Structure formats: C-alpha cells, structure tokens
Length: 418
Image (cartoon, rainbow, N blue to C red):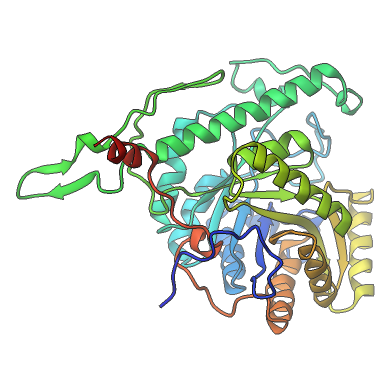
C-alpha cells in the first residue's frame, strides 16, 4: 500500500535512491514564439477544453509529477516590460485556474499548478479558488505565484499605478525598490492564502442529519491578518483543502525572489545555465531558508529548461533554426535552451541534480512535438537509469513530492490552550 508521506527532507538529494521529480510548463502551443506554426501545434484549438485535456493527459501518461499552466493579466509580449503589439505570435489565454479545474475530473494522478498573479488579485479569492481546485482534483492542486510590474496591467484595475520602465532602468534604485515591494507583497499574499486554508479545522464539518448540525462553528477561525499590504479577517468560505495546504511554487531569478521562495514556497523554479550556477543558486536559497527560520523544512528547488528534443541532435538543431527563421529572430530565454536527444538531456539533468537540484520543470519549445519527446523519450531513459517512477506512488501532489500533510496551525493552537 502506497503512502502519501515520503521523506520529510526532499531537499537532501544526494542519496542515490532519491527519485528525480519532473514537471512541464505549459504555455499555449509551446515556448518558442513560432511554435503555433508547426504541423503538430493545433493553433485552432488553443482555446478549447479538448486541447488542454489532451496535453495534460499526455503529461500524465508520462507519469510526470505535475504541470504548471502559464497566465498573466495582459497579452503575451516579446518585450519584458510592456506590450509589443505583435500579430504574428500567439496572443490571448484562457484563465489558468479554470483550465486546471476543467482538466481535473479527466485526470487521476498528475498535479495541477496554475499561475496566479498576486499583484492585482486578492488572496481571499485565490485561497478559495485553489482550495476548490484541490477538492475537484481530490488533492492534486498547487499554485505558482507571480508578480506583475507592468504599467499596462495595473491600468486594468485602477487601484494603483506602476510607472512604465525599460530594461535600462532595471538597476535603478526606484525600480529595485518597486520590485522588492512587489515580492514582499507576494510573500504576504501567500501567507494570507495559507492562513485561510487553515481557517477551517479538518473536522469542522459535522454533517449530522439527525442532530441538524452541519458545522462546528468553534472550529472555524478568524485569521486576523494585518500587514502592510493586506488586512484580512477570515475565515474562508471553503473548508480546509484535502491536502491541508496545496503546494505553493514560484519562479526566481535573483536574490529578491530567492527570498520569496525561501520564505513562502514549497517549490522554487530557478534558471541556471550550468552546474556551477545551479550549485550557487541552491546555496543562496538554502541560506535564505535558514534566515527565514525554515531550516529543516522541505523545500524543492527545480531547474527550468526550454527543451528542443529529437532522436538526432542535428535534427533538433535544424528544427530550432527553422523555428527561429519563422519567428524572424533567434529565440532567447531566461532559462537555458537545451537542443539535443532525450538521452543527452538525461545526462544533463543528472549532472545538475548532483549540484543540489531536486527536480526539473521542462518548457517544451513546441508542445505537440517536445512534450511527447519528454514523456516517451526522456521518461523511459530516466526510468532505465533507475531515477524515475514506473507508476504513481501517491494520490496527492504533496505525496508525489514527498511533502507531509501539515497540521492545522489554528487547531494546534486551540489544543495547546485547551
């Protein structure tokens, strides 16, 4: 009989028996801007439930831990800080949380981790949306928290203004202060969400028809959060999720978001370009984890890679050149772009794992081509090397990641004073 509780210390990956964790990041037709023009891309179906069912179903057949689903509060852009007004690339998205909720009933094992933008959304809304997803998926929900520093996205809401800035301004004191504030706000956002998930004790629902008691009101708790960015009384309107705490994750490129990961997340996605850089990033995050008082708590650090995969490395390189030609410019990314065979990618993942990473989130350049190359090429190769599962061993996302179901903070406090 399998257990949903594995080792409480998945951040010690040096043991040869430690399984490698694997996720895919889903974004439209793929991460390359010309992906939608490939024969396998299905551009006419990107806004249909069938497309997302098929894509997540393929990831589940590959026994991946979870998928993340990209989202934003403005159209995609090739420009880092403002809209680009292009018409030759995919623009427009479905809501990531709603995609996950639609896919949940037609999947059984894989985790579902939609992106949520903390900057302009209320944590109360996010907490009940992800708690609902956890119920719909029977314990497979997570979230990827993201910030928005774009002035055009702030203008959708009208509650605050964010000044427009360019790449040349990123290292100015004003922009550094802005970005630091956004990540501090995201940390408080996650804290409120987590407290709201705990605001119902696990046995708060009685549902006793004979006595007419549906809930025990004493087991619903005000969270009374007061901070710089939020004032939230609670409790939630949604009972505690099946996992207790759905998995929280965040992408981090530098010290400020590293602190968010160390303080608030169960998984951090990082973007090293070689093993030495991976080792340095892991060291910095672990140091921030100690500062945050979370030393000894489980925290996964996943490496992100864009992947262009073929059985022949020359074919993979040729395909990337063709995609770049269609896009009109060479593709660049925050993450390393790997071009080659599934076997060579397996070599790289195992090398980086020795640098301290506990898993990887792969970004398929063309989902229709590179996702099957992951599930049908890379996964069997990793399994042959004894570092990847042959079946799903747990029924929840926390279980797949080796994360115990946490105790309810308010129940523990009540018991301590009883």
